[in-house]
Length: 316
Ligand code: COA
Image (cartoon, rainbow, N blue to C red; front, side, top):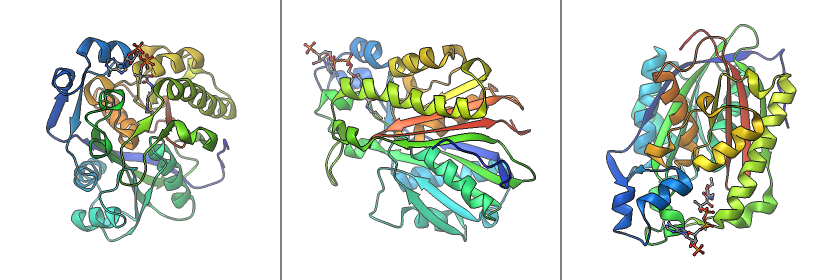
C-alpha cells in the first residue's frame, strides 16, 4: 500500500526527544544469567548493552516531554497523542495517563503494530493532520524487559527498553512525507509471538530471513513510488533488531552503512521505540540536513512492516 496524496495538507517534524531507563544490562551481565558470551552476542547481533526496567508510561512521559519542549509548543497546543507500543503497562488508558501527566487536553490512542508501530503511527498522524489536526505528538515506547524470559538465551540477549517521540505540525503544501507504505504478512505470525501475559517467543533464523525480505520489499515500494533509489537516501533509519539484518537490508537497498543510523549496540531491540531513538540520535549528532531524504523502515511481529520517506524540512 505505497501512497501519498500530494493535495493533502502536509506536516513537518518540529520537535523530538527520547528517554532510556537508567538501569543498563551489559552482555557481561548476561553471561552471569544465561549460557552465552559477549563475543557471541556482539558477533551475531551487534548488541553490547541494553537498558531495562522501564515502564511504558514512565518512558513515554519523559520522551514526550522532551519532544514538546524541543518543538517550542506547550502541552495545551497538542491536538492528538498517539503512542505506539506492544508492551502497554495497563490494558487500556496508557496514552491517557501520559496525556494527563504532561498536561495535555487532547484525544489519545495507542497503536500496536509491534516493532513497526512507530512508522504506522507516524503515517496515522499525517492522516489526522490531513483531516484538520494541527499538532500531533507521536511516541514509540516499549518495555520489552517485562515480557523477556531472562532465562532464555535465545531472546534475552536481544531486547531492551526505551522511548522516542516526535511532534508533527501541519504546514502549507505537501510537507515532509514523500511516500509511505504499511505492510503485513500474517502467515509469518507463528515465528515471532507473545501470548497475553507470556514471554517473547521466536524462531530466530526464520525471523531473520523474513525480516530482511519484508523490510526491503516495503522500502522498495516507497522508493519506487517516490521515483528515487537507494543512492538518493541521505540517511536510512531502520528498525534496530540485529546489525546483520540491517547490513543485509542496506546491501539490497543500495545504501551504505555510513548512511545508516545504528544505535542497537547501546540499546538492543527496543521495538516501537527503536526508530525514534535512532532518529533522535542522528539529529543530535547533526547527521540530517534540510532537504535530505530520510527513509524510516520498520518490521516486526505479526509480521508487520512499514516505511516512510521524508524530505527533511528546515528544522534540524
Ligand atoms: N549465546 C550463545 N549461543 C547461542 C545463543 C546465545 N545467546 N543463542 C543461540 N546460540 C547458539 C545456538 O544454540 C546455535 O548452536 P548450535 O550451532 O550448536 O545449534 C548457535 O548459537 C547458532 O545459533 P543460530 O540460531 O543459528 O544463530 P544465528 O546466527 O541465526 O543468530 C539470532 C541468532 C537470534 C541472533 C538471529 O537469528 C536473529 O537476530 N534473528 C532475528 C531475531 C529478531 O530480530 N527478532 C525480533 C524481530 S523484531
